[in-house]
Image (cartoon, rainbow, N blue to C red; front, top):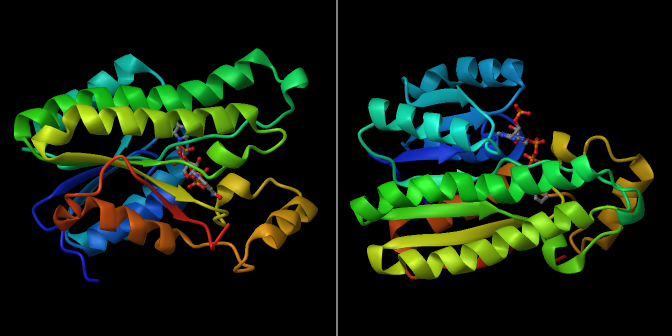
Length: 247
Ligand code: NDP
């Protein structure tokens, strides 16, 4: 399937590294303008911007924290002033702060929920106001199958991802009549910085659970995102599309 997003603008949070960068590149290759955002890794953002020169000015990079409502408001003000429209929001930014519940610092609970779940709300709230006026749009939230399995040591992360999926289903119903779809892409184990800190034996244990016996690639996740973002995927909403190698 060849995608064409020419004349569309896409916002990808956490779009300068890992899965988000793969998603941003796939949209650029399909002709879109892309605003890729990040929080703190300015070097990765600069590297991506420089590597994106081939896209003839269609790549913009912006820094802000999705968990801070004021920063999200300022970001959308920038978008409004500099872009005539946007059609697609990919809520991809996310963090892990693993520990068992009995030992979990309150800050680790709060940081994960505020970034993964509250950040999705902050971004979606302002985006839908624009998309509703436009009577067209696509929102795609990157979740995780951990939302339904649960993993020891990841209760905060699992709760944030389950919350994103419940949020998606509710929001999809609120905006369906305006030609706006809201869906999740739920990747399995994808080899990015996100899991780079895991001990090798834990990675091997994860790998042994994957029927396809390999980690997925960012390109494989991006393909699912572009499918849901396509104009012709108009009747898919409130869904969770798993890209897990059969997990
Ligand atoms: P990475 O750690 O490689 O990238 C995370 C991105 O999110 C970075 O660009 C980071 O910015 C950004 N980010 C983190 N916190 C914030 C914040 N508060 N505000 C704005 N941006 C922020 O992760 P992945 O690419 O692997 O993961 C992307 C998404 O996919 C996450 O939601 C994750 O939960 C999900 N996922 C990942 C899986 C995997 O195996 N990798 C499996 C299932 C789901 P900066 O560069 O500045 O740090």
